[in-house]
Length: 141
Image (cartoon, rainbow, N blue to C red; front, side, top):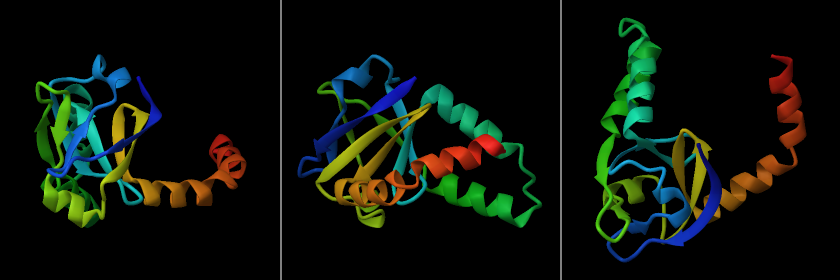
């Protein structure tokens, strides 16, 4: 299980030093793709396979399913952890999702999320006050 919040800086080449506490849980190959709410998601090999399996159960004949499959899969980039425990985040991905040098890495059960630090702080401010209401709404469903 992946959890926690880790503040890091990308180097000038867009490389991210992975949090040491997470390294033992990660696979050598990771998959980066469009996340939700302005972040990018990084999946381990097995959880990426599970995610793709869930997506592939949706009918390609349905427009919304096609849209999700196209966006998710076209945004996917295979990453490898280098000998210095870093991953190379593609520059075009960083630009597209407006992720700057200061980033936040979140463990979210079965995947990681990479957020631009200022976007994460903004998101957190918006959602912290709503947390209990959100939990109540989820619990009722």
